[in-house]
Image (cartoon, rainbow, N blue to C red; front, side, top):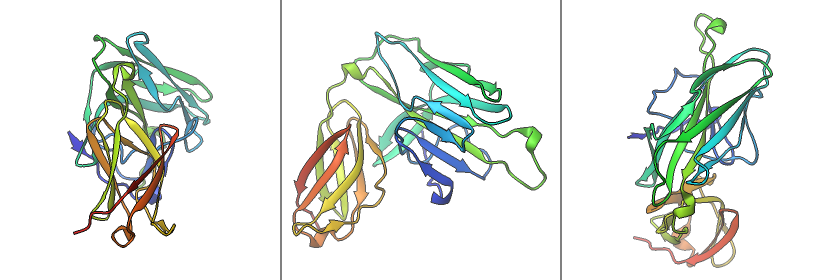
Length: 257
């Protein structure tokens, strides 16, 4: 199981549903799928070269397969590798481990210029009693023919969430807490919650600065947090956020040491 290192914001683009990472360093190891996930509206784009749709996949007993469309909008072939990682959370941070629970076909392919490649995901086992969550990593691999001495070609990686059997999961059940200068969201339900546009205001209506305020996911039986400035001097704090497309409001009192 791997804890992922942070990525310099200069080389990371946050999108809705997945993450796009632009890296100039050597290729990441197979057990390092991506940095902290973020999210996008309708389609992903690797530097206007590799377009990905959809940005979220769900499978269940009635739909044991799903497809991903990879379109090469460049003028040269693009080598692409697709891999699955089990997704968990520990201590408020995402963890990933290679998984073979779904069959991916093809997993490595070269996409001709202007062409679209269909990648299929197929489950081989029975339905599970509740939600399972994964991240599908799509790597645009370096082209050896373009290698130049002393230069590293950009390695692009995009990850999208993949869910199994959400139809069998207990609904999201969020509770909020403000302690130690952090807003915490705990999910006691069985379904992953997608949270974005988190806002916090003091009792007199002042907006409090919330860090790490990108699209975040909180898995079942997990807790995530956001650092918030000045919360201990604010009295009761009103929290507003978009949770799975719906507006959520709560009021919490800070616990300060």
